[in-house]
View 1 (cartoon, rainbow, N blue to C red):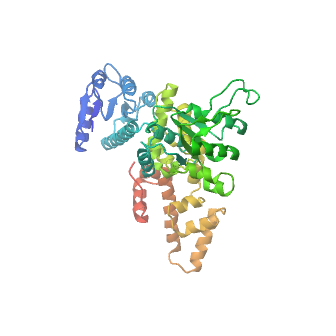
View 2 (cartoon, rainbow, N blue to C red):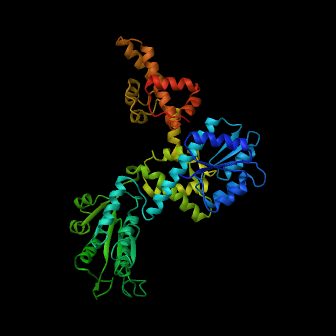
Length: 492
């Protein structure tokens, strides 16, 4: 791991931070001014940089600009006096990870540096993975199965059927199959059969002769001819009209086809890769897809997992798409905070990878600041979570998913539309009628557990933040977490 750089013209500040970080077994390197740090950045880089904002010569903000230009992913903590709030705002606008107000609590300063260090190591891991797998990104076991399948098929010309939900990246897999095949030097031609009107699809696939129909003023090569020697990717094959399925079957069977209006058979030396989000077996049973064509296409089937099946890939993909979007627009790359990343990882993303990519494009254009928090995300993604937090006892699915197997959760599940006060009264009456001892203690503990769990979920497990939001003391929430056996809490 690289050292942590400390840049400050105050020797006492440098000394205190050096000693505190040394106790944490963290290596440091100190600079008395920003210019020396800028010079060092030409040949090396720290894991985290901590800099004062006001120094003799160049300022911490100038150093921040240099760092972000050369190492955009490097976390920078800016130290600033309490009275210098404008500078703190400027630091955030310049891409600082966080600012540390002087005079600071040493333990909190070390904790902040630790957070920045964790972020730096996580970013490095993501960057390394992106550089190693530039075609398709994924660390989840389900994606590793896909990568292994691509490897096994690397020297094959066999027909492949890719299945998976819309937006899951089927065309990327098809391109990877082509790139790692013996046909890699030849064309890769893609056609979405659902996007072409039925009347034009035949001509798109097989081409047409001059005068074959009104408007056909010249002979036109179809996709099969364009893909000669290479790969033809037919997306959404399940939507292909039934009569065209017959023609496609013939090409796959004997390797010959005719242009529309043509009489001379043409030889097709093409590998076909098809993809669909539909269940072709069901389409066959319904008489909407030819069974013989299905078997021709289904030589090797490759199932692509949905994004909700590979949630651990969301941070990796989001970082990649944010970098890609920023590059396209010529702006600085925005960064998701850890709570925002964790929140996105809980979403289902019905539009899969494509929806996440669109979200990252939106964030690049619309989100304020360089560090994106949960409230900065589109309202349609956060409104449900906000509603759940504002009414913690009415969200039956959330209560059950959190595993709260107490009697209040059971009542809420059965009658979620009722007022929670009435539900609590009903439960109290039930316990009293059963002569349960210490009813108020029992219900009080269950109520506290539910509210504290809701607060911890909202703050992503940060205990101190949860205490502030609940209006109770830090020691109080610590004691109650221990008494109630609540797991998942962590220090801020």
